[in-house]
Image (cartoon, rainbow, N blue to C red):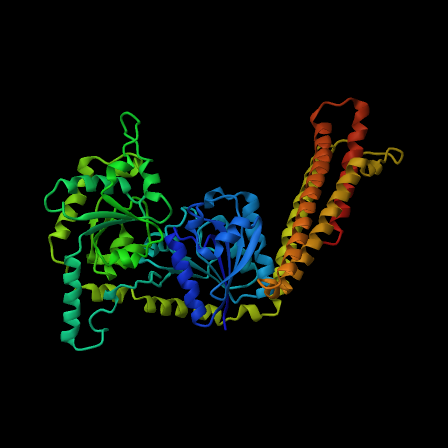
Length: 584
């Protein structure tokens, strides 16, 4: 049984993030195929509205101040809470808190494989830590990555789109495995001819029945009305359609993803000339607004055309694929991933750059005309559902699950979590970080000593009476040394606490909340004490360093020359003693 640690700084239970939906499907698929998973994620999400996340995490997000743990489908999720909503707004402290959760999970869970699905600096740091612990790593490319993201610490790269591979993986000289989109569709056309029971004649009759039903539908739908999804284009399209005799009989509707989404976004449009609001919700009473609680399947069963004027990159057209499985025609923007997934089952419109650059401004009539013409062509043409067999075969969810499992099997077969050096390697990684910080502080003294020696090369004669190595017995230096010792002791305690939390991690993950809270409180107190000790040590070292710099940056009197010599020799002596001190 393979043990997998999945890392995603973006909330996995975010209902407004298409990539999060695919992540949940992948996690569920791996769990169904026998893998044991722990998911490390955070509360960073698209919207702060409680309805934007799954019900299982709404209450914990509202009442947790640091972190919380839940079970969803027998899969444990470890959440770090953030005040920031956007991933780009995460503070350094929030990023560090997320990263610090890695050590106890690795020590306690001992994963065979670490998988990441978000392209950001926090993910890169976590993958780097996994590599230091000799744990195989995989990265799932679901959307356009940040321009500076590196796949350096990823042993395996998986992608849901061939376009993403060609655009972002191949240019870095890496290879990637195509696994296809993890989007579940449930429409009646999912069982295409050849997969349906019955004779060929019965299958054709069923297909004709569905096509006739689609032709009689009278609903034109926009899902997720927002600025980025082209609500302005849809509103102007509705205005033109109401003045056309062919389209006058059709109804128009929007399906929200959060409460009052349609009205709130409507108020964000302003006239580019006078700055006044462009729309009033009372002027669109003929548009039916379906709340976010409405089942999508219910709406799609009576929809003729789905209009998706997406004005931002979208690598997971979940709603479009679901609509096609119900026989709904799709009109959307010309994006490579849309064409890859939807093929000939959609009509693609090239949107002008002016519309994209002015999201809060209603589009001009010439920008709406292509959409009007495409919509009119769709409703006046009988639906052709014969080519859906190839489309669903290419985007088969079951086939994509098999690709994912087969791609991860060689990494899981290494059973890195069973290696005896894993805990030692993980602890060493923490010690290495501590030692690097101590070495950085020692570098300050080293630089001052070198500067002293180079400056005093012509004045290094000191008599025995003039020897003042006692200069390092000054209160300033004593304080610095004591602060450094406090930092070292506290960090040792933190390492022990992390190991303790790791050893009891699985038992305290969900059930033993009292023990879990006790460990969390202890870690928080230790981290607060370390922060204070670090501040004291930094202040003391700064005082000593600045004093030395001032002594050599000003022109001193001849009688002060001896003092500079004493300081230089004392610093050199301290540096030499420090070299022979045992390290962690």
